Length: 68
Image 1: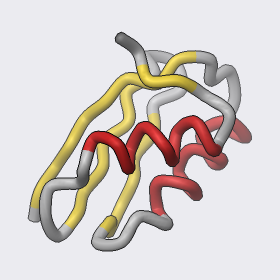
Image 2 (image 1 turned 180 degrees about the horizontal axis):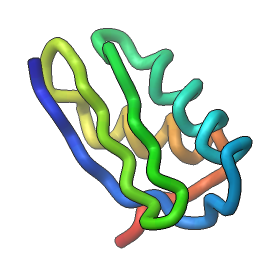
Image 3 (image 1 turned 90 degrees about the vertical axis):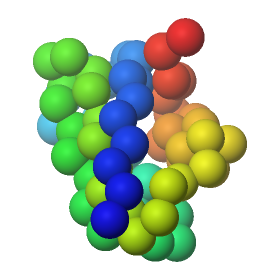
């Protein structure tokens, strides 16, 4: 199992978290996504490391951005 943590900006509520969780959950191999709205921390548990481009695309599809 691989764990990846990223910071997502712009989330303000649990609906935001659910949108990010749903989009990231659609990436093949992702088993669980934990979102902390307050800090913006998003932890992704997957079978293998997830490509950074796939994470970025999923976060942007949800309407948010990765922190620089």
